[in-house]
Image 1 (cartoon, rainbow, N blue to C red):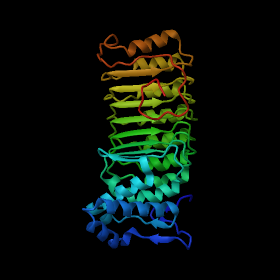
Image 2: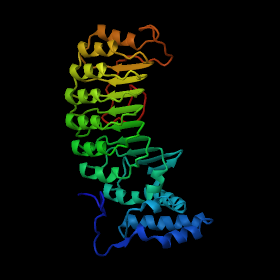
Image 3: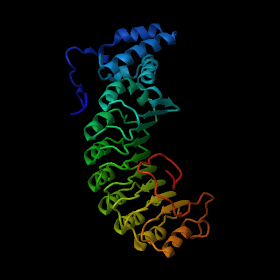
Image 4: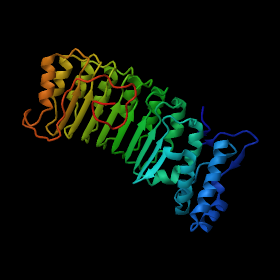
Length: 352
């Protein structure tokens, strides 16, 4: 519902006046591409023409078969199509495919239709990034979008900040995560996610994750969801960031995180500004740091944490003074101004 591309069924039937283009029977197109492989201008012009027709709703694309998706002859055409259709919002370089639609006026249903042509590119990528901050995407669209995430993806970054996506969409996303994923950055700040959605995400976290960043600023997530997440943290994690600024979390959730930090963890960042955490939860963070930690950062500004415990956290993050650890890149506890509502990118820890 709400999208022309549904799981297992392809796109919904368009109006009668819309001309269908089935990629399943595109041998004529492939023949044309083969004929013009040495004339990239011709391929580009053909891709641009198709992109304009899809945008105008004159042409509708059907899913590629597995055989078509692997055709080398099709990759140049697909890349040219995506660049014409998405413009600078589509980036394909260094094994990374990024779709940055923040601020775009493209409708999600149109994006899903056009992404059919990105399948060959997505399959060869090791990292996929979907930046959908502030777009019109909703729960009903997530299943359609996540269909394009290959099972071979090693790194996945999704930014849904400021959207109307809630637990239903988060559950669909969680259930579709590749089992061999190594890195996951999930930007759910200012969405409708609650403890229920976070708990399901926790249950479906790939157990070989090396890096996990959960950005949950300004949401209704509380102790229940954070505790569920803490208990399911993969034992292989080397980097973990918990962005809990202005959530409902308190000591119970923070203590759960502290007591369940993986032994292999080396970098740990937690943002608790504007939460209900007190000395009890904050001190637990310093007391339960794994032995392999080389970088620890905690932000407890705007909370009831005392100056004494803040000093303890600062000591815990100052190496080698604390518990004999050493690191040139040690973090620090800092009082900062409130970050903006949306924040999902990999940025300096205490900045927007």
